[in-house]
Each structure stands twice: as structure tokens, then as C-alpha cells.
Image (cartoon, rainbow, N blue to C red; front, top):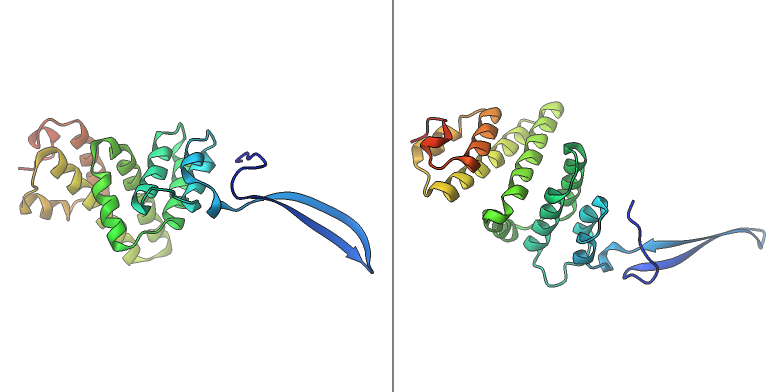
Length: 202
């Protein structure tokens, strides 16, 4: 539940009436919240987790769309939520704040920054869920796309921590299982060198 106050941007008082033969039988008044007119930054600062996901549908203000999406993901990543609730909120953001290729490239660059790694790992978990959903629905293209995203995340983490990734490492990653990729992502964040990851990459 997201609690709102009368007078906040996007809130309107609506009236629903029930008339029969010109006689008014009932009147129901309620507040409606027009999300597109609400400032996303304000709702990202609220304590209710649902507000962080709904912020994806709100006015971004001075934020570019890639910054807007990253702000939503970072807020969700920093919240005290269990994995199931976190993934539901991420799914809302991914579904309703879609980026064009240029914006997606900007988001990719922003997510490589060290302060955004938690949001990046969370996005990887969401991609894993898309793989599982693809398996359930029998969609091979969905499985491959989700796996490709996880592989790219691991490649980005490796290059950010240890520099340019060799073709040999890239080729090996493309053949790794999802469990292996997940293990590598966690180890890369703690490793001091590529050898220190313990996964045999050179």
C-alpha cells in the first residue's frame, strides 16, 4: 500500500454516482492518483517499497530515462526486502520503464560504476528468473536471451575489476552454466585478481 496525501501532485477527487430513473441512489467519492504527473524522485524517497516500483511510471524530472530506471533499481536493491518481493518490484520497473537502444547503452554504462554494483547483481538475478520463466513456457529464445544478459553482466564485472577480458575468457564464459556464472559474479566482487577468483581464468 502506498499512502498519499490530498494535495500531492497527480491526486484528484473523483465522484461515482448510481442513478435509477433520475433518482440518485448512492454517491461514492474517492481519490485517484495520476502516476504520470507525480515526481518520481519524491516517491523514491518514501518508505513504502511499492512506491519505488511505481516511480517507474512517474515523471522523471531532470533525470534522463536511464538515470530514472537506475534510480528505481538502486532504491529496490537497497531496501530490506526478501528476494520474492524484490523481484516483483524489479519486474514492475523492467516492464513499465523500457529503454530504447541508446538509453539501454547509457544504463549499461551507469550500472558499471562501483556504487551501482548491487543494482547490477539484482538485475542479474532478475535475468535468471526470466530464464526460468522461459523454461516453463518452452521458449528457447527467452532462455538464450536471459543467459546472454547474465554472461554480459559477468564480462562487465570482470573488465571493471581486472581490465580487458581476453577472447579465451569470453569464449569460456559463453559455454558456462548459469550456476557457474552466478558463482563467478560473486567471487569477482571479492577477488583481488583474476586468478584469485578461483575459476581458472587466465
